[in-house]
Image 1: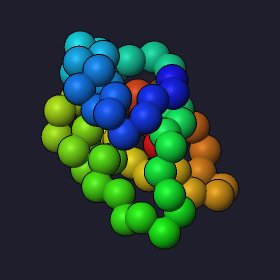
Image 2: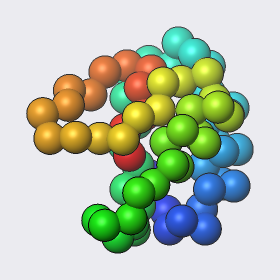
Image 3: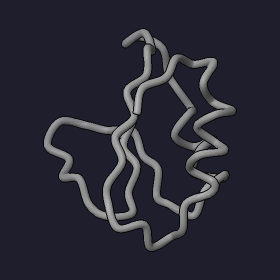
Image 4: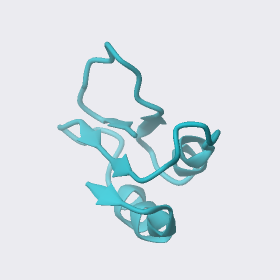
Length: 68
């Protein structure tokens, strides 16, 4: 999925509707300045049953996880 920072509401609705045992990983691409500390992963993590985290080099996509 791709979204701008203004896409938080839409991402919350989509991810919030998915079950904790969702069978695929999800990658979200957002336009965020590299020097900007983002708390979007934490916000989304509180709005879904899936594990949402900020992606880092070397992360391995796994079922039921959301990387952004």
